[in-house]
Amino acid sequence: MKKYVVPVVLTVLVVMQAVSLSTISGLRDQLEETNRQLSQVSSEQSRIMGNIYSNVDNLLKRQASIIDTYDYSLGEADRENLAVPITVRVTPKETRTETAATLYLSGKSIVMERSGTTFEGTLPVDIFDTIEAKVVFADEGVERSEKLDIWENLRERALPSLYAQFEGESGYHQTTGSTTGTYTRKGNLNLDIKQAVRSEFREIRLILELDGEVVSDKPVENMLRNRVMVDEKVSLSPGQTSAMRIIAEDSLGLIHKLTIDEVEIDENGQPVFGEFWGMGGEAVITDKDGKVLYEPEHMRFN
Image (cartoon, rainbow, N blue to C red; front, side, top):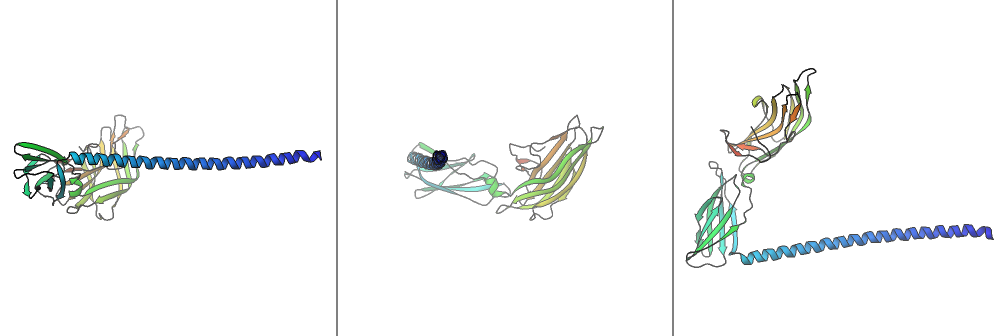
């Protein structure tokens, strides 16, 4: 009889251990589920509190505001002056017969016309300017002013935009025993073209430069395809710079210059690549005479 006791005890222990492990596993799953639910509750509470704070903040701002309602609309871009007219309509909380209003937009001002208790004014704003809007109410020698939130990127609304990325092989191969070498570009240039409502690109060209001089100039024949084949080689010596750029002219006559890559050979015959090698950022925009109208802070075009 004793010889069966040990196996029975072991079997019982194994079963108890299996039950314990299963119980522990179940408790672990329950704990993870509880933590997940607590996390969801915490996130929901944070969201609700954030909404409450935001609503209270908006309510306090509205109570402190001297304006009951306001809105604005954008007109059609002026091709010659490169400006967009912005019409602002404002209704103050309180008005009197003598109340007058002046609109200030990005350094310009105009006395607003009154219709009932609503004032309206229109001013042109340069498409490259940041919109800063304010209205000043004058009543019996007392002036009250308030800033208006007008969030518009006039440049993006009025002008087409262009981005590009080079996919393929490129590299510099130094000639054995010499400080000179050859820089090769071979692959596809993928274009992302976004036309504006009333302005679009009329012509797009791919150019290669050597020390600032154009050595290759090829038109992009099919802008709808958005892909350009590249297969170029250029010999370089120390101190020389090679660049690949996209040059696009829009229907307003503005020139968009987008640098795809730029490489300079240092005094040791080694390549030094530009910050945005292989991928163009924002384009520099100039007029036909080369005057820079817009230049992103993160890049410079020489």
